[in-house]
Length: 126
Image (cartoon, rainbow, N blue to C red; front, side, top):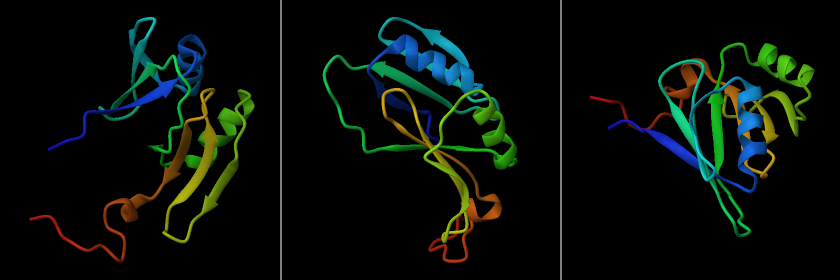
């Protein structure tokens, strides 16, 4: 089984789509109430769904990039605001945090081998 995509709720589709395109994602579907994006690396996609009513999204979307510090610097140069600059975390990931215009939390990270094989991994694949 492979995860296909994650859909994030947004308050303003045009503003949200422009935000993700500016981050470097390729928009592959565009409608007034729905947009889908392809990640610059790999085959993962994610989508946006317009929500007319107020919402609270407690989810966090993670995007992995090996050269995290360079990516964050380039995004700062484009005007993106970060809640947290790249930081080494206790769980062996390096993470930066920002929010999209609708308040969805985004973590840009690099974990290397620790993403799938942390020292405390419980089960091994067969």
